[in-house]
Image (tube, rainbow, N blue to C red):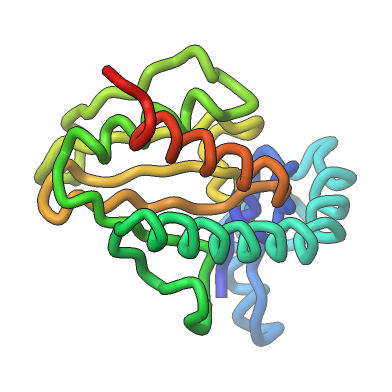
Length: 193
């Protein structure tokens, strides 16, 4: 199995890297393919990042727990506002992703903009739907994250097409997730244009 340290296992602080786990002989074969034949696991691109990697592994259970707790709160709040969510707040969870269907593009876009405004980094940026390689539809992405591309940090993205689903994920702290989702709901549903 291969995994990214941008996600849960990196605890939200690892700026690069990944991990390989499995049978010893298979991990060794991957190491030779990843680096240089003959060097394998004796070589690697970790540089000065090992401290952050170990700290990320150490922090990841709490960080992932916060993200799951936040997703449950998101589902409960957004469902109470009349939106279709999956999974529901009381459903078993296997991931940190929370989907919410807005039913129309304007609310989805406004909500993504509010997620960005309630981010700790680049809160002044306004995300706009844009065509992206690999997608049939325009996509909007909101995520003011400390580590660019980190999916354990709070973000929201989705294609601009029916049923106008935004994929919310992550969050380093429950307090931030709660503040951001309440702020996004207020900005989207309780403010005048």
